[in-house]
Amino acid sequence: MALDHTIPVLIVDDYSTMLRIIRNLLKQIGFEDVDEASDGSAALGKMREKKYGLVISDWNMEPMTGIELLKEVRADDSLNRTPFIMVTAESKTENVIAAKKAGVNNYIVKPFNAQTLKSKIEAVFGA
Amino acid sequence: MTQSVNRKDAMEQPFERVRAYVDARRAGDATFGDVVALAEITAESMQAFFATIDKSIYRELREIAEYITNMRSEIAALHAGELKTDRLPKAGEHLGAIVVATEEATNAIMEAAEAMLAAEGEDEATYKALVNDKVMSIFEACSFQDLTGQRIARVVETLEHVEARIGRFAAAVRTENGGEAPETDRERRARELLLHGPQSRGEAIAQNEIDALMAK
Image 1: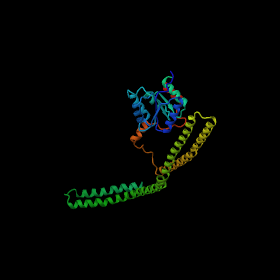
Image 2: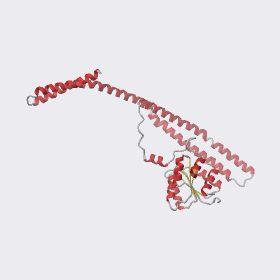
Image 3: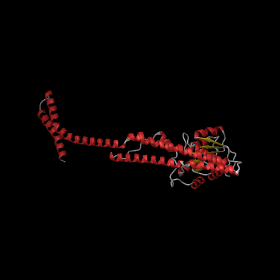
Image 4: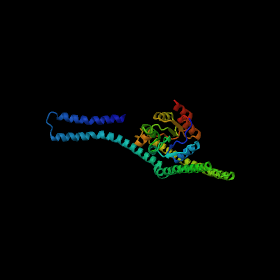
């Protein structure tokens, strides 16, 4: 199945630099419809206003962390099917397992390049 | 040893005197005068006992006073005022400046990269000039590393200074490692929900190991 590059993507990170980097990487992969949020609660608000085909979120954010956002999304009947990729600078086994238990679709450790991002997105969509 | 024998005698003698007085008065009814006399005998008799404990209390108080004097000089050696008003605020300023410098440099580099990616329909000479210009911007932006490196060195120096002084103070006052301070709500939330920043090399697992965990 070919990857659909027209899906709206929401990227969530409290560092504007990281948002910019991920936006550019997504653009390089071919995604143009990209929105940004600076923490979990802002992302949740955006997700309730617009249907996103993919969420790419950092873990470490305040006031709502990425893992809290993931749990909120999975507990919401209208959002729980949204593919969710976690991006973090820390990759302890227990963190990966916690994210997987919470329902994450993929997990990327920073720093990463466009090829890694693309392959993880393709894996999520079975492309 | 001698002192403990003296103290034992000093404790026993008053009771012997009181016992003798009470035995002598046992036959008759006790009068008010008897009670006063008994009180005087008791007070006089205890003088010897108090004299022995006075010496040991004095010695202990002198040791405490010496300890407090020593601790005061160690506290003075901490230069807490200097740490609070000078070194720690400066370290904070350095860290804040590092955040700003790295953010500015990153933005400058990304702007240059974005401008090159966005260049379309240019002739070769114009495109080459644009790339040269933007590459020079990237080189300039990378100079942040020198400045932030110097600032980080100053912060490390401050931390080492604080560590050395606290270590010396702890040794001087012979502190044991106390129990941990009670966890605040903010600390509990951070422990439970936040990760603790980039790991050192060797601590993190690689992306392919993460992929294997996700595939299970």
